Amino acid sequence: MIFEKELYENKDFSEQEFEDKIINSKRFVNCKFKSSDFSYVYEINSCVFERCDFSFAKLNDVKFSSCGFLNSSFNYIKFLGASFKDCKMTGSSFTNVDKLDDVTDCDFSYCEILGVDFSKQILNNINFAGASFENVNFTKSILNNCDFKEALFNKTNFKDSDLRSSKFDGVNFSSLNLKGAKLDLDLCISIAENLTFAKYKP
Image (cartoon, rainbow, N blue to C red):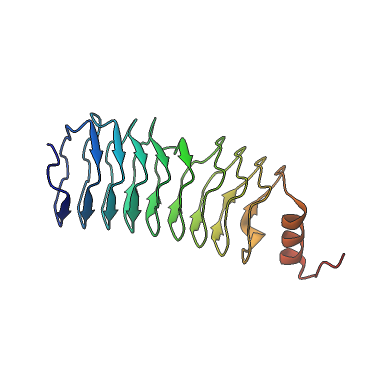
């Protein structure tokens, strides 16, 4: 199948095989891509997906650039070789997806992220504000200058990660594993105040 129109609404592309090598500047609203196959697609640029379902889709090796995925679902997907650059994922859900390997300057604010492996990755300058995390693994990842403000955490592992210059305002640290993590002074103070109810005074 080849995408010829610029706008697609309420379409079911489930189990379809897409032939476009490059998909540019398309908009999809309330569309289903369940178990669809993007194996022949190299790049998807400047496209918007609103309330779309990608559950079980094959997205291996696809390069996404400057795309918007708003309130969309990515469940039980293998992202092997896929990359996301300057993409906005606001309000989307990621459940039991295979490792997200290459993520640069993306916005995951208010996303629901369950059972995702972000370990051993460079994830600088990512916006996770207001996101919900459960059974998520950030072990040995570099997360400098990320925004986790008001995020909700349940069984989230930051062991041996680098969290310097990241913001965790309004976060409950009690369910985080921070063993061996690299922290700057401001974050150390925030953690101490949150867990002890004390107030730092220089």
